[in-house]
Image 1: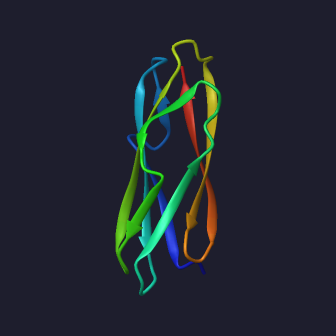
Image 2: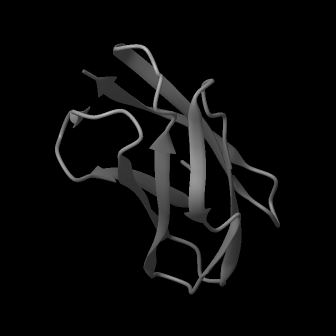
Image 3: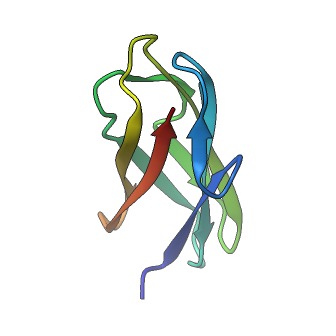
Length: 108
């Protein structure tokens, strides 16, 4: 079992963007199960025409506590409609353990 767990949060269960260029939030909740404070890194692999407006690359989480990794993303104005997958890697810096996750964003 990993000494941390991750939960992905969206404004909606299946995130839908009605307008290209629209900003949207993704928040990863990290629960540190260990007895020690840990630092985690987040590496988003954004598809073409997706951009990170703001978000942290690392996050310090106290022992037995949870914290959110908030990110604000937006798309280009001329992005094609469709379903896009955003893969990400969350890594515990000290132990080098990582988990790969992904979320789906639908552009109409």
